[in-house]
Length: 122
Image (cartoon, helix red, strand yellow):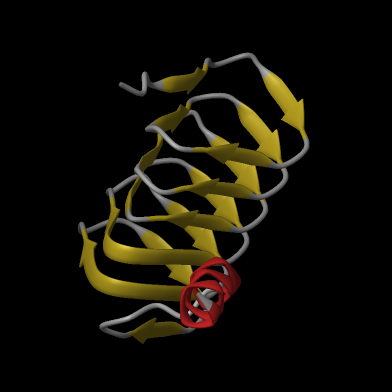
């Protein structure tokens, strides 16, 4: 069983984060975040980089593209500067978003494309 990976407020990380389990960021992360599970950016959380996950909930600030295979939820305190590629999108009143949004049934990320080509080869 995977636990929750937590980056607390006051913590600063530079580098990419790859996780199999849930991730919650309340601190600052400069780098890409990739998880197959849930990803939450708390109201105090800040990310500079691409976010990739199956379910993403953002209440903080993101400067970078967001790729979500399932549902992306932008809370009223969210501030996003980047393009969104989502299966479904929920935006609360007050959320700020600057970029383009593409809604698709199957998100074609490099990870998904690589996995599909590996499965086809086997």
